[in-house]
Length: 90
Image 1 (cartoon, rainbow, N blue to C red):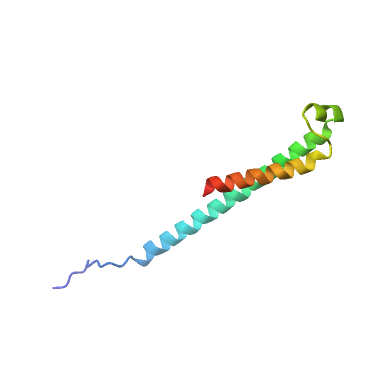
Image 2 (cartoon, helix red, strand yellow):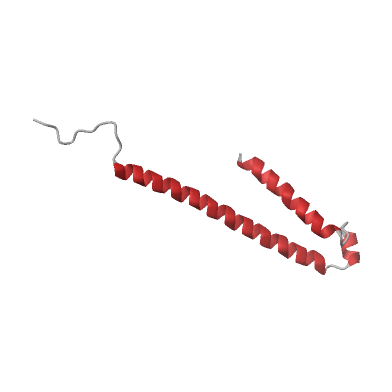
């Protein structure tokens, strides 16, 4: 008599396919999340630049900035934040 429900050490193809699709969807989700986060950060940076550019020279002096420091300061702050976030992810 033979045993019809004999199980061996292999995984069925459907389990392998489900695992592969799950892995792909998880990776795609992380990629989309990073893209959306970068887009939100870019929009916030643009809004802050618009706000700083709308201030007059006296208001900028009050917060310790010159008009020529606005662009470079934002680029430097964004790079520093990016480096810090990269350290946290690891």
